[in-house]
Amino acid sequence: MKFEIELFHPELTGYKLFVNHTLKSEGSCDGKILLSVTENGDCEIWFEPWKIQPKVRINNFLIDFFLAEINLYDHKFDVEINKDFFKRYRKNDLKSREDSIFPTGAVHDPYIYDSVIGVGNLYEDIAEEIKKVLDIE
Image 1 (tube, rainbow, N blue to C red):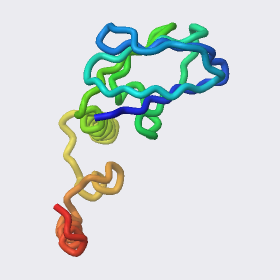
Image 2 (tube, rainbow, N blue to C red):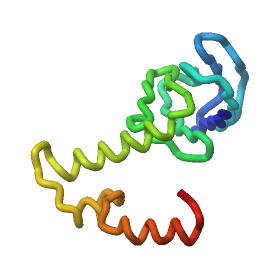
Image 3 (cartoon, one colour):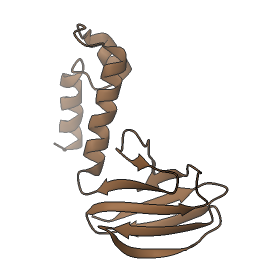
């Protein structure tokens, strides 16, 4: 799978891309850089100047560092890129929402769960009918 990783920050001037500890590309930029990663594995992106926190988009989705399990340092960030990246991101997103709305041991009210988290089972029958009409699984 191909991943397009975009970094942007007004002060961003340089970068280095390492995949599985091998330098793949480096260069200068003016606030924004678009990188293409086709290999699975550990991805490190070093940035200049240090001590900025660039925003990151992966395949045109603005990424939350915590949900993507990105380790951010003063001079780089590390992220594991593989075919399950977005599945893992979605799982972390749902878990984060559940933990913030329903404390440990709390009873999950299906109406609150569906309205706040948006992945409840209240409308499963309607979703199945829509899938049949659209002819999708």
